[in-house]
Length: 178
Ligand code: GDP
Ligand code: MG
Image (cartoon, rainbow, N blue to C red):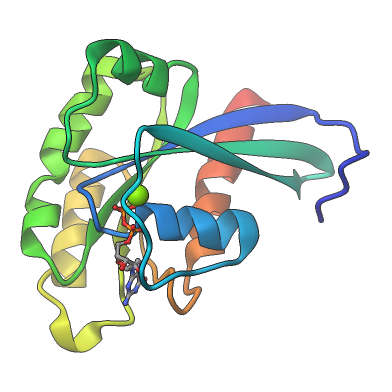
């Protein structure tokens, strides 16, 4: 599904946000390269990866931006990070309650810096660690509904729902621009 010679109909910029260590970089590695690493290094600065896929016979290049979580970005970097973003993946770790409790702050950051029509999906990652679950699925589902966000639980480790999460966002963006 990734023919480099094909023409690109759309480029969609999507940003990954959420506390550090929730699995943002591994979700991206799984989506962009189908890779996963248990000893992933903390992300330094800002980076992006791309993958081209076909949605309704159009080729869509997804440009996915990733950054370190907790450390506050410089103001100039923050605005560059969100500039032009049409989608956001707001990630928490289902085994760390705090990372879910911080989601409203991340939403606030999005509201301050991103386009108001940005498509947002809430992602509860590490759903392979069911025995360590600290955030009930229902709590997140309810929150997402109240805030008008898509919602999925994923595992970058086991590859669960990662493709679905990106497709949900990209398909909705596609629907909006068409
Ligand atoms: P980031 O700081 O949000 O980019 O988090 P990373 O992607 O660097 O992941 C932090 C740690 O969580 C690493 O040790 C990963 O291997 C691990 N991790 C990421 N995703 C998953 C997952 O779905 N399941 C499990 N069990 N571990 C994960
Ligand atoms: Mg990272």
